[in-house]
Amino acid sequence: MARATMNMPEDFLNKISTLGSKTDEIMENVLETGGEVVLDAVKSNLSSIIGADTKHESRSTGELERSLGLSKVLVDKDGNSNIKVGFAEPRSDGDSNAKIANIIEYGTSNMSPKPFLAPAKSKSRTSCKKKMIAKLEEEINRVK
Image (tube, rainbow, N blue to C red):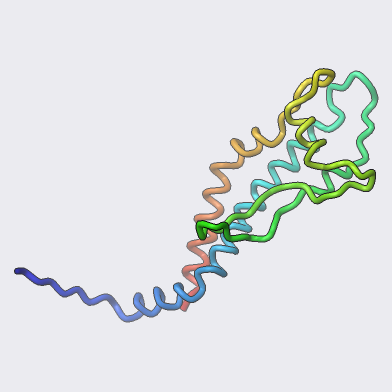
């Protein structure tokens, strides 16, 4: 039986071992960077459609836009790290921000849909990936 031995450079091995202990911290930073890109796209889309093309004067208070934000990085039951773009609850009037966002996104029988989430997702996909890759490379290069 043939046998091969491969020796890795010492500094590479040190970097890999250090990276292993900082993986959670690095992944959190990378996910937050990507989340910020998507959050900016959602905020931009939301602010552009609020009050636009309405039959009546807009009754927007700006509370929905202010409640938009990022969650903390959480680990799911499968061990995957996730970050979510969403709305803080509850509203000052007792209604749900998620419900209002859903009504705006998909419309009602009396209101035409004004999608802002789906377009933001597709619009920010490429730039989000690029920023996350750049952040990952930056974090790996910082590890000594």
